[in-house]
Length: 409
Image (cartoon, rainbow, N blue to C red; front, side):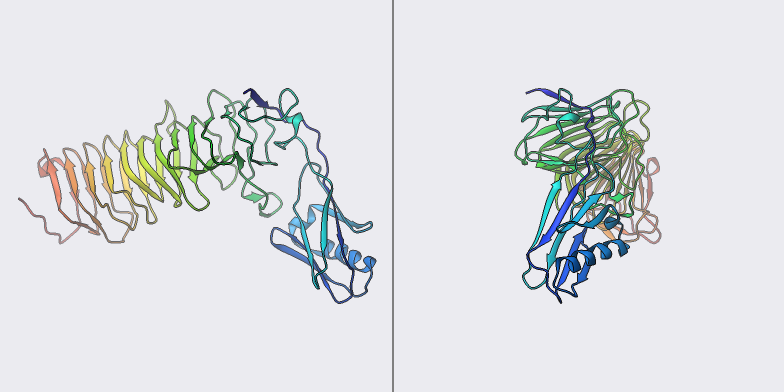
């Protein structure tokens, strides 16, 4: 095992792709496809010249921005040459009447943004199995060849690395990105750690890690400020043994279909008041602890502990059977679901149902001295009532709306 540090020093090479067909037949349709968008030509003469010239003209006439990223000429087939060295494109082709299209990478694109180029790594060789990957002291982005089945070690991205890792959802060319966007390493069988943002530096504005359904133990100390619609750090497809700590920055946990976290802990460091974390609708969390910062849960959690001024919002159809809130924290329960086990509202904790008009049930609620429950429009039904724990009614704040019946026992 070695430590491999990213530098990004490779020379950029232009992609050249050649497309040929098994037959060139009048009346048949030839199609080129990028990003589910097509360019077609209906052959009028049974010659290669007619078909290739027709496709060249169709590409030039296309309004789709993906087809503007290369130049097309006729040269014993259709030859596509990238307009920007080091920027790859992915194209496929079909034709009617069982005509076979052959797409050949005459010259593969590579350059300073490719994971698999040896010149981009300190020492002049690509990482080997079990190597730890370090991104430090560089502004060169890692954008291509992001999917690699080799099982590497841990990933460290410190504050002095200011390049991107991955691609934003919206390409600057004016289309939704179709190339792989997340750094996805290994085969999903081995756990690894990700450490992001330690130290003092510019920070990266885009880091996207695909856990490949493995155990990912992440510690995020700080992040840059996103320049796109994405969070500056997105970690997706983690398994239910994963533990993630966020001490600073803006982080999203996501999954393509379903993902999980054993523990999600939001603990802002000194001066890190801007901590913002989101767990998407496809992520099932175990224990979630928010000791400050802002947290949005859109999927599920089994236990939520909010304290130290945390602002936690459960939205969509988010579920969490047990909720603890205290010490200046507020849990905004705008989910359409209810609380199926119990809510514990401790001193200076607030459970707020005012952001949603959907009716819901709370199985049980213990309200302690100095606790606050807000339900100003009376949307919550308490299955086994609210119990004052060691407090008088005058020592809590309880707003359950107008016309409600409060029982005393």
